[in-house]
Each structure stands twice: as C-alpha cells, then as structure tokens.
Image 1: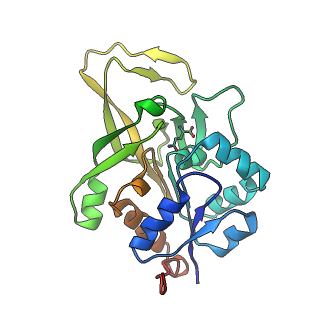
Image 2: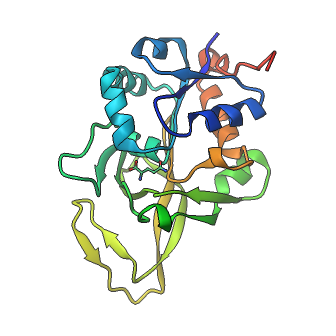
Amino acid sequence: MGVVGVLALQGSFNEHIAALRRLGVKGVEIRKPEQLQTISSLIIPGGESTTMAKLAEFHNLFPALREFVQMGKPVWGTCAGLIFLANKAVGQKEGGQELVGGLDCTVHRNYFGSQIQSFEAELVVPELASKEGGPETFRGVFIRAPAVLDVGPEVEVLADYPIPSNKVLYSSSAVEIEEESAVPETKVIVAVKQGKLLGTAFHPELTADTRWHSYFLKMASDLGEETSNALVAVSEA
Ligand code: GLN
C-alpha cells in the first residue's frame, strides 16, 4: 500500500505530519533516496532552502527526488519546498543552490523580505472553496516567504497576493526594478499547480486549517488506483 511521504531533513516536516494525522492520514518521514520508492506522494516542507539543499546533497537525494517528480508522482512544496520544486530560483547568493525542479516557474527566494517582514494575510483561493465546499479565503502564514515571479503555460495560478505598487519588484534575472506604475496595486503569485505538482509560498502546515492538505491528498488520489492507496488511515495514533 502506498503512503504519503514528508521530506524530513529540516524545517516544518513534523507540522505537515501532524496536519495529515488530523485528516486521518499517516505521513512517513523521508530522509534517504531509497525511501522514495516506498511512497506514492511527497510533501517538501518549509524551512531554509539552502540548508535543506545541503542536507539533500549530503544524502544524495536530488537524483531520486528528480526522478520522483519526472515520474509524475504528486509533490507539494511549501515555502522552501516551493523553491525546491521551481525550475529557477533568483534572489539568492552567488552560485545559488541545487533545485529539484519540475515546476515551470521562477521563484524569488525571499521576495517578501527577511524574518521580521514575515506576515499573515487572508488569501482568496477559489479552488479550495469549489473542491471542499468551504469558504474561498485562506489565512496564509508567510515566513521569509518566496513568491512566484513568472510561470510557464502549463502552470495554473491558484492564489495571488496584492502588493503596493511602490514595492520593489524583481525580474526573473534577479535585477531589481522599481516598478513605476499608475495602478494602485499589483499582484504577486503565491500558489501554483502544474499537473501533479503543487507549490505554496506560505505555510498551511502552521495553521489549523487542513484544506490545502485535503486538496493535495485529493490531487494524489486522482492519480488512480495506485496512488489512491496512498491515503493510509492511521489506525493506531
Ligand atoms: N525564503 C526561505 C528560503 O530561502 C524559505 C522560507 C520558509 O520556508 N519559511 O529558504
């Protein structure tokens, strides 16, 4: 029977496992390449993407993670996890870091600034309402949060966030541009989906609201019989 894995190198993996447990699903901690063969879907948590990448390199996880994505298995990245999944990341120190890739977008690693610029915001996510029947708003927790700067044609934008027009925007080539705009505000993308890949710039695992986890599990189970088995109910918790 397949299981839902949570990359457990660093960051908020315990919180993801707890959120899955609230939904009656067992999340399995993944630290080694061979463990990826035992799971049907994967969550890459938030944390610090450089540290996570160093640990992933140390454990030789990148080839197996790329293969997992290329096989079309469902993967959800939150915050640092979104950075991992992006084809391109900007706003990082010279040389950058290794990425898993697969999600056809460019992310800015620290678009919203440093730790003290962390914030919470009400997001409008029509997809959560339509699929789950609940409200379409979701309280996003943004911690040193990235944002998606541009997306390829296959990528669906699930949520964006309005920013003041005087906010510094970044081009995908990491060159800072002061946007002089007559429009009072513009929007930056904070949640995306491409096939079985899901990316959120914020941290649903740090809230009591499990709708994003339900959404991902639904995505995973939509794959067919093999991965519908991935939703393993926790019998004894
Ligand atoms: N911006 C952070 C990074 O580069 C991610 C922050 C987070 O996951 N909360 O890793």
